[in-house]
Image (cartoon, rainbow, N blue to C red; front, side, top):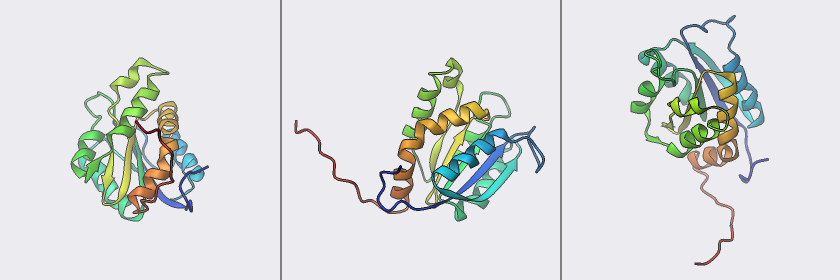
Length: 173
């Protein structure tokens, strides 16, 4: 359930960044996890792309998907390997970052593995579109989405210009 008034359907895109998982017949389990979650948002998938671990290819895919999407989620390329360049591709594209989402994803991942601290997820806004980069493992993708899921509908509403906030009582200090 969403705590956002007048919940709506969003437009979503998934981009797999991998030198090994390319093409229509490839086994893209991480991307499939993302697409399955989009259905629960609820969101209509407007694009699915697969690109190599290359800064220019990653940027081109985001530029192609973001104008027609409210949210773009990339999987892959966030590790420490020499070909893991997704953060380097995305950071200069962001109008602004949303560091709290990346931080909570890493923190949630630490509950499963100490290696989560090595992941370099970044989250930001590109021309009014929320862009999240996730690791390439299906398990890590699911954990990252679990971590940000409660805030995602509200974040999308705010980015779209719906800045209404439900009245919440808070203690007076």
